[in-house]
Each structure stands twice: as C-alpha cells, then as structure tokens.
Length: 387
Ligand SMILES: NC(=O)c1ccc[n+]([C@@H]2O[C@H](COP(=O)([O-])OP(=O)(O)OC[C@H]3O[C@@H](n4cnc5c(N)ncnc54)[C@H](O)[C@@H]3O)[C@@H](O)[C@H]2O)c1
Image 1 (cartoon, rainbow, N blue to C red):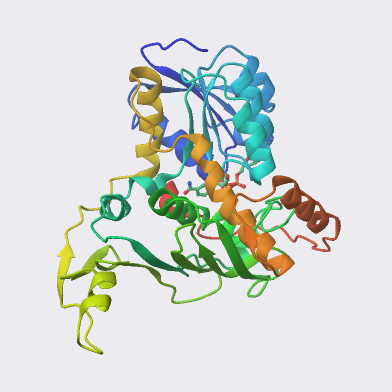
Image 2: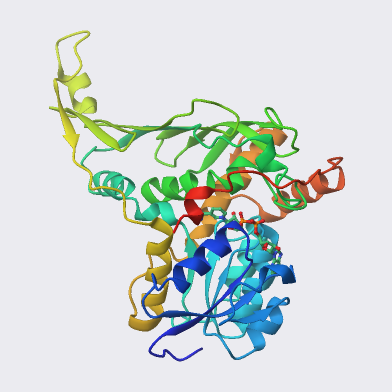
C-alpha cells in the first residue's frame, strides 16, 4: 500500500469529458492535498495540455511508473475493471467513475482486487453529496415516515439527443458501453435509491431499447420492485422525454414525503395509517394530516469536487468515504436486474445471477447490428467543464 505523504500524487486515466474536468479541478488547486502527477489517454493528442504531469498512453505503464499514489479512472465502463484491478494490485488508491464496472460479474472481479482497508477505493457517486438526498435519507432511516409502504421515482430529466449518442463510438452500444440510460445516467439515482431504501428482493420491468434514439440499448424504462418486507417501488426513467421531471414520492405509515425541484414536502399523518384504519369508526376518513415544508440547504458547491476531496482526505487523514466502491455493486444489481427482467419478461430475484446477466450481455453483443456514426457534438456536458 502506498504510504501517505503530505500530498497525494494523482494519476487520471481517460481525458474525455469527466477526466478533463477532474484534471482541471486539481490543476486549479481546488483539491487541497492533491497534485496532478500523471495523465493517461490512449489518444496521445489529449496529453499535451498537462505539461507538469507525466504523460502515458498505456494505463499499465502509468500504474507501474512509481510516479503516483492514486488513480482516478474516467474511461468507458468496460475498462474500469482491468484498469482498476491493475491499480489495486499495484497497491494504489483508486477512485472509479460511475458505474464501478459495466456489469455485476466485472464489478465482483474488480472489488476482489481490493487488498485492505488501508487502500482507499471509492466511487464517483457525486449525487450522495446533495443535501436534498441526505435529508431524505435521514428522514427515512430515522423512522420519521414510519414503515415505508411505497416509493415512486420518476426520473425523466436525463434528456439526451441523438448527437450526444453519436459523439463517441463506445456510447449506447452493448459492446462499448454495456447499457443505456440505466447504466450511464440513472445509475446515480439507483445508487441513491439503494443508499436510502436498501436493495429490493425482486424486480419486474419493461425496457424499451432504442425507443427514442437510433441506439441499441435502453433509453426508456419502467420497473416495479418489491422489498422483502412487502414495500413496493416504481422506477421510471428516460433520455427521450421533454420536459422531464425528477420526482421522488415516498409513502410511509406516518405520511408522504415528496421531493421535486429541490423542495421537500412532508404531509404528516397525525396517527399511523395502519393503526387508524383498524380502529376508526369512520368508513372513508383517513388520518388527519399537517403539511411540513422541510428546509434544505443549497446544493453543495460542487458535487464531483466534494467526492474527489473526500477521497484525498480519506487517503491523507482517514476521513470516512462518501461512496465506498463496494457499494457500487448495488446499483449494478438493480440495473442488470431491470434489464434481465425486461428482456426475459419475468420476475428477477435480487441479488441477480452475475453469470446469467453476463450471458445476456454476450448475446446482445453477438447479435448487435448497430453501425456507429461518430461525430463531435456541441454542448459537451458543459457544466462539468465550467471551472
Ligand atoms: N460522475 C458523473 O457525473 C459523470 C458524468 C459523465 C461521465 N461519467 C463517467 O465518466 C466515465 C468517462 O465518461 P466520459 O463522458 O468522460 O467519456 P469520454 O468518451 O468523453 O472520455 C473517455 C476517455 O477515455 C479515453 N480512453 C478510453 N479507453 C482508455 C484506456 N483503456 N486507457 C486510457 N484512456 C482511455 C478516451 O480516449 C477518452 O478520452 C464513464 O464512466 C462515465 O459514465 C461520470
């Protein structure tokens, strides 16, 4: 394991949208205790803009160079596993972009390479730093809503155009990306979902593959989940709907919490519903309620920076991780489970069979007929690049 020093020498693999963004944060001094010691991209032309960092076209060479203590992996999904395994085996600390791997079996292999608690292994689940979700989590987990009955989350504000999908040869293909809206965008929400509610035990789903775009992976999803205690959930997501919404509604025995546009509204029952419906003499009267608008602090200044800073402080000072990489397995359980349930048109138990999903993915790749027409696009995820 690399010894802690005064500052962490970071190497970034993958200098596309996200890698470039992270590199700029470090270069601008936004991450105390971190220096950009090395960069790596298979496209040599992307390396020249970091004159003070050692440049590599091969991630293994960077990992073996002795120039870095930690690696941030910001490459397409399938490569997270081999690059992550090589870095972990070399004793480096690792921060991997979401999803931690392209599918569950790869994630298991990646996590197995993590050697000890002293080796920091984190994932870029930046939405965990959003005070709205932190507040929802604490309300649910502290029992403020009572027994949870149902969760409905509509996340149709992930709009992406055809130009977005055409912008990279790996995007929106089974062989290059490994999935669509679930794996790339909604992985954030599914991580938050499992972080708040835990994992359900069963899922059924309808995924539409290329419903709105000329792509082969899912861009429209409706799923129903069931938890071991009988609570249910409905998850809807799409990259082809506008205007989209992001509305999370949680029904508990003690009331309903709604989260939309950074507003948290709690309609609280004066008595628990289960007790009320058994004891009241009224036929139609639900429990009396009062409404509470729950104050939420402004969004954290920069979510990605918060996770990167936390990773560095975990290495230097032992700070608790916001998103340990091992928790990234749970969103893959949901993503792969939803895809399998839809494709096989049956209920899928969670945890899923990693081998069954890998076989499904191999079939998708083998039967792919997609011809990618890769073109640059305007408006790269701009807010990531505006430092
Ligand atoms: N956390 C977030 O909010 C967020 C947002 C966007 C993307 N991402 C994630 O970041 C990762 C990268 O996405 P992106 O949009 O930056 O992709 P991108 O296509 O813009 O960039 C990927 C880069 O990796 C390079 N690359 C590919 N294979 C490589 C390898 N084996 N070794 C070295 N370099 C390699 C490519 O040349 C390219 O420059 C993905 O996991 C994606 O899901 C996260």
